[in-house]
Image (tube, rainbow, N blue to C red; front, side, top):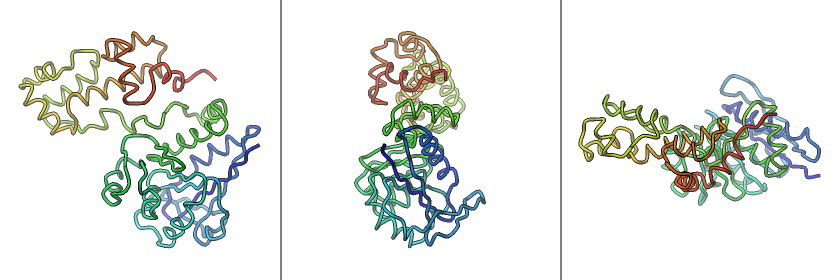
Length: 318
C-alpha cells in the first residue's frame, strides 16, 4: 500500500476553496483500500490564518518544522499579492524537495517569486496570466488549460481547477474507478482534461463593439454547421471580407477563423459529453463535415481523438 503525504501551505489571505477542494479529493480517495493520502497543513510559525472569505484556519503545525512531503500544495488567494518574504524564502528553500509540487490558482505567483517556475510551462487564473508572464519572463505561461503538468510540477487555473488537478493525480495513483467514485461523491464530473480551455469561445473572445459584428458572433455560436467562411460572414455584416476580417480581430482579439474553430470545437465537445449521438452526426452538427476532419481538429487542439475524449469525459450512470 502506497501512502502519499501531502502538505498544504497556509498563509493570511488564502482562498479557502483552493485548500479544501484538493484536500476533499485526497481525503475522499483515502476511503478506498490501498489509497492513503496523509494530509497536513502548515503556516509560518504554525499561526492561524484568515482566508479571503473571513474563515480562520488553524494549521497542523509550522512550516519551519515540516518534514519533506511527497506532495507540496501551494494555494492561491489575495495573500499572494504581497506575500510575507519569509514565506517566499521557505518556498525557495523547500519547494525543490517533494516528488510533486502543485499550485492552485494564484499560488503559481508564489512559486514564481521563489524561482520554482523558471523554464517550465505553467498556468494560473486567466486574469493573472499576463501579469505572471510579464513579471517572470523565464516562465512559459499558457493561459488556456484548466491545469498543466510539466514533470514534477503541476499548476492549475482558478479555484475549482484545483479539484480537477487533484482528481487527475488520484487517477494516476489509483486508477480511473477510484477517481470517478471520488468525483461522484463530490458531485463533480470526472470530465475536464488538463488541456480543456478555462473558458468557452464566447468568454475567451471579447464582445465586439459594433452591432453587426456582435450579430455575427451570435450567428457563429448558433450555427456552427453553417458556411462560416470569411466571405460568408462578411456578407452578413455587410462589409468587405478584408474590412470584416480586420475589424473582427480588432474588436474580439481573435481572427474569424480562430473564433470559428473554437466555437466548433466547443460544440463538438459538448455533444460528445452530453449526448449519445454518433461521431458522424456530431461532426456534421459541429461544422466539420466528416469524422476525419473533426478527428484532426481534436488531435490538434486537445491531443486526443473524439472517441477517446468521449470515453474519458462522457459521464456514465453511477
